[in-house]
Length: 156
Image 1 (cartoon, one colour):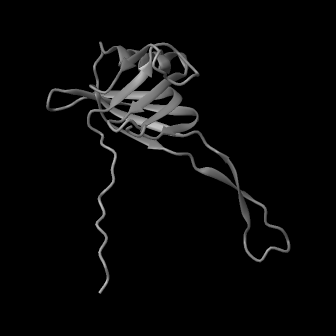
Image 2: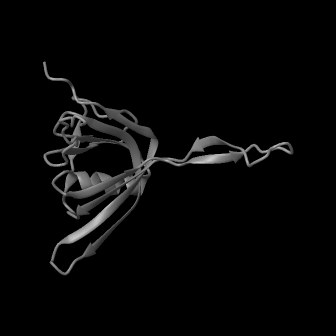
């Protein structure tokens, strides 16, 4: 007879999180002293995609099969679906990033204390009217560098 281990499901909650953009263009991550704007009350969901690296063919005349090595990765991308709110200061900063091409700092702060930081510029956005009377939309970002994942701070 095998012994069953008592294990528990692991997850990161997406409720009660903070989604922040720096108030001004920045190439430095958001800190406690960074002026920032909140987006979580307009964001309905988000998607973060790590970059796929290019494959470089290094096959030679003596190769038995194709041989490849990893090349430079592309830029990561982020997309956010939102309830489009024209007067929201955070969304104004997003539209400013699109117009100017400036990079801004972003942070998603989870309830457990973990967070994800990145620097990005908005590459496009859209908005549309829905049959339920809510203006919705989305913003797409190109990340400069890579995502930085911060683990939760252990409780003392």
